[in-house]
Length: 95
Image 1 (cartoon, rainbow, N blue to C red):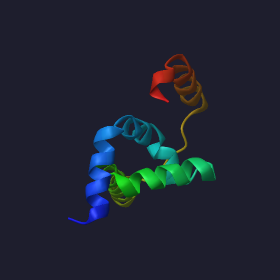
Image 2 (image 1 turned 90 degrees about the horizontal axis):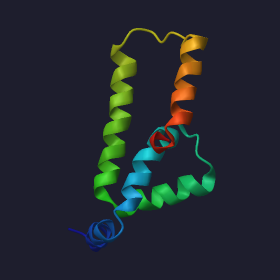
Image 3 (image 1 turned 30 degrees about the vertical axis):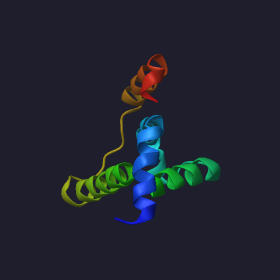
């Protein structure tokens, strides 16, 4: 095991809250929707945290497989979009 991975492992143990933030930002990160500072900080965390890096890789692979094997994407009805936005606003811990 390289020194970087060892340091990353212990860094992860000392700062597990970063992992929770990683998961909350995952969709925006994978889609490229984060601002450059947040994206850079997340990439730094991924460089130090093998478990989060594996999580991101599996998330990307899931998206890739879904796009390859699912029916063509259909637009979400406006009424459903509105209900979803309202639900998310009423549950800020889900953001």
